[in-house]
Length: 247
Length: 377
Ligand code: SF4
Ligand code: SF4
Image (tube, rainbow over all chains, first blue to last red; front, side, top):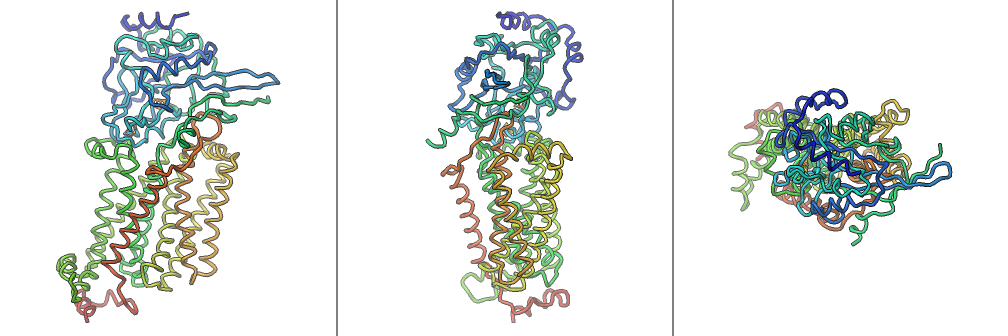
């Protein structure tokens, strides 16, 4: 069950062989300009995530783990499991969709940044240098996934970093570490033998909003097309921001 | 298949471009519009445009000076604004904006000074305690049509760059179908001209000598701009309604089922058609009314685009709710920028009261120095 963790440890230590092979076979690489601008991180890796939505039980353990790990302020989320009640042909069931930053290969949040605070590391992780960020929120507008927000404690742009500090220390992102159902699988897309690479090869997972051309590096197995873009449904019952406004 | 989806848990993202941004885009738009309306009278020395041009210059100056304050306040880290100036980020339209704005505002100040120079000179001849100050402001000269024209062209370039960047900055955001349209920069410019003509009508009444000719002229201009707004808006709607272009169809679809958005649409149509009818049917004696509606219409357009646009979730169902906060990030910010604008207007009009003239003086015929003497007599 715990394939994701075991694989990660292997993947991180094994030298990447045939890195280009998988990149060419299933994943379109970033445009030259975007790739050149990358800095920091180890270019040998390309971190990515596969989310098997069939395995997600909607417990929000990842949501909580992320908040604890990254000190995410109240009312803000770097990741959340969107939960829907779906009624079809008289039958009602739940649908869970863990959402996070997609660490896009061609990320629209990067070129818009007027200060260069948002950038992509050579291992594909998109980060914000919050000592440089002016909090203009241009990147918040440009992300097609609502993955970014303004952190009101730092007054700068904030988002999921794949727990970059943990990854650099050879650990898994907190959400992956804690995932009860084993729905979140993290690994190196440059390593053809990693679980993520194998799943992408064998399960043909989908990404969110492919028409935006962002080349997400978070893939979903069992993604219902009704949830691939903006969801056409009755809005959420729980609105934390509303409480804040009325407070 | 009949599917019903209820979103039980999701995140609500609050608006990240605050009412400050609405104020900025409104004020800078009006300033650009004011510059454009002032050019024929000043930079191109057309007599019949001179009086309207002076009011338009007040619009350009007051709005152009207040706008950057609103922009700075929209940054969540305003103290770090200098971070814009230590990098080269040509892929970001906002970065280009940080280059264009100082260029535009500086150009505007010099242009306005060149335009007002003859008034400084005239005020300097009046025996008052401030005469020395006026003489200092005139820098020992008077009207210089060449300088005005050169600076007019410089500020025209600045205005064009500002109009371009403010529009494109928003229009490039593919993530928001409502914004991602080449029509947006045109709509911003057209509604800015509507707002500027509207503010000219208001200031003509309260900050100038309520000249009927200026009123009729501004009302005619207003009608023209409103006509253009209707044409562009109609084209946008047609592209979406008939599904001619996917982004436009998506944009329309994202808001079509919302009652609030339908009310907004109706409001927008009324706020465009009503002043149009008034301005065409009765260009004289109605300036205050048509002007007020026009200014409100330009503001509403930006409010709807920015605040309304941000309440459309990119992935979630339905709409995010927005309630205007009372503090600096909401009502206080709006009132604060309005107050700053009003203060600037008071200061500028106190120092430069509307010159009392029975009729525009001949401009091209006489030599500049002769004219200055004639004015003093
Ligand atoms: S998901 Fe959004 S924030 Fe993350 S890399 Fe893609 S565009 Fe940027
Ligand atoms: S909010 Fe910060 S990271 Fe985002 S675009 Fe502005 S400066 Fe860049």
